[in-house]
Image (cartoon, rainbow, N blue to C red):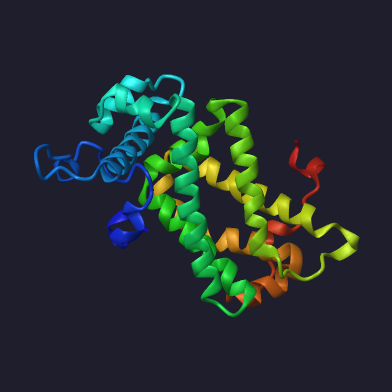
Length: 250
């Protein structure tokens, strides 16, 4: 889904969706100046936007605090009043943005009475949000690895929060522990997002909805039942026919 088809409320919530130097977000001086708390909150939001855009463009390692401040239209002293450094600001942007995504997913999930439909709607909400703000998707999914141990911990903690969407799954077959199966599914979805975003196809993320929905349901319901629940056609898939490697010359 193209960005123009997204509701503006969906897009502007994520850090990086707006420019920090937008004149509409400038802070006026003089007697009508905003209260200090409002000023600080506005400057923080602008810095998060500037960080996301700068990191997406230059990469975390090459983005400097000066670059971030320039993109946000905020001075370095103000930056250090709000954050201890670049890593602190990055993690703040990541937590804020992923929190927005999870809340939107949770709302979409809760709107459905059926678990299968809820999973599909939650995935759709996530894919649309990320597609609508490619800079945040790049920063949060690709560049977090460059942050180092703190970034990896943040990512791991985020992935465990997705377990909540699988709280009511059927018992997994073969005595496999449900939590481990859920973690494997979540990791697979994350990997699919990573490949699509890393290849510069972030705006095409919504195209993954059918396959990711099937991937999330099939381990618990079986492929046939998952296809029925998702309204997908069922039939013999020639691509699933076993091929003898010897016959291919490989």
